[in-house]
Length: 333
Ligand SMILES: NC(=O)c1ccc[n+]([C@@H]2O[C@H](COP(=O)([O-])OP(=O)(O)OC[C@H]3O[C@@H](n4cnc5c(N)ncnc54)[C@H](OP(=O)(O)O)[C@@H]3O)[C@@H](O)[C@H]2O)c1
Image (cartoon, rainbow, N blue to C red; front, side):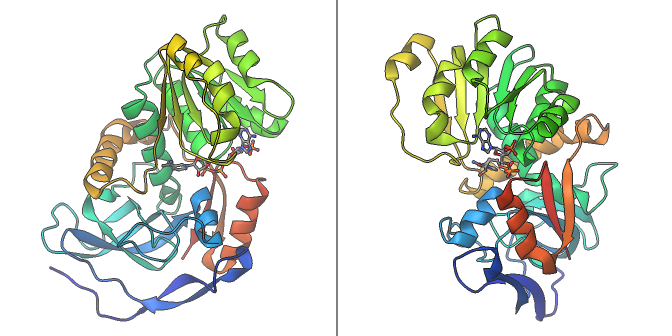
């Protein structure tokens, strides 16, 4: 077993719940690897929408997770804990985290550490764990999207959306998506979307029906929650599956069960962060098996809006809050 000497590391600290300005870079004790864990020297961390909620005090980390914000990172292995096999000090890696990513070092269960796909540089690799694990687990493992079925993915130009479009397109599905500006819709089409719908001016239910000869979408990947629940069900095909992964449009809505029954449809909600460690490990291993080869071939690319030094963490959060970005925002150490 190799351990780091106990010292201090740079980490993003929050002076309290609030706006982006509460975030600054401070010092915290180095994490030590527990049994079954790996400590990574973090090179880059990806921003996620949930990070904004955690900063505002609405999304506390799960029990046992670091209080430091950050659900994904890339870096090199700094230490391995008891019982860990397959990782050695110095190995490049990226990881899905329950927290702690906005720091120079992070401890993570070994099952959530993944190799960097061939052809992806170490900084860019930080853009992959959340989008790959979220899209693969929800669209393919849970909703079972099949080749030639139709996926409607909301927010196609966001981190999750840019990955979902590419993966579903490469695996042979028809992809419809929504986005808020002409530039973002053009990006979605360039990534493989068959139809990009203007969610501000167009009715996505009508557009989905038009694009599918009236059938509707077999799978809808939704980031809006309550605001879109009724219309998402209207947009579903018979035996369609609506997977809700975000609540950007609120949490409480009325569900017309009759519409579900008539379609023999399913409504599923999940969060990746709260899944047990063993389930996250199974998802990571499935991602490495099924998704990394497509990334290594360059068929599915991490889309990075920008990379900022960790000292600019407040500006990075403000950028994500503005919604002006397309794809992922990364912080570097
Ligand atoms: N449950 C999970 O395990 C899990 C894991 C990861 C992410 N998520 C969720 O997935 C969602 C996307 O995350 P992200 O990291 O991709 O965030 P992001 O990059 O900030 O993307 C947010 C997206 O929301 C879109 N949007 C805003 N208003 C919309 C509307 N009225 N209709 C349709 N789309 C709208 C934006 O579209 P424009 O930019 O075109 O305006 C943008 O594409 C978030 O809600 C996040 O919390 C869930």
